[in-house]
Length: 101
Image (cartoon, rainbow, N blue to C red; front, side, top):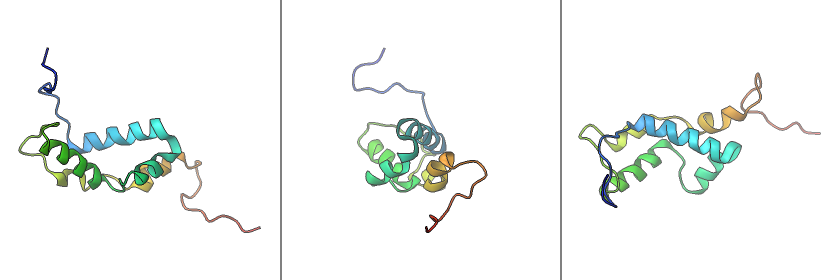
């Protein structure tokens, strides 16, 4: 057991693993609105998650190894593909213009 305020050691995630977990969680919580919710919070790219994580590292809320860096989050995924494509109808183009009546 660990004291309150201390983190348990040994549960390291890579930037890519964390990004995938965030993507899945956001889709589960917000469905088709996930990207809009994140963007409303000012999170518009994976590098924004990296900034959040490394601010938490600087505040000693999270830990890191010497191999971890904010750049680990730069080559994550595009938000449109990650959060919009799962809700597109199968076989339909992902960018459609509304038909004019």
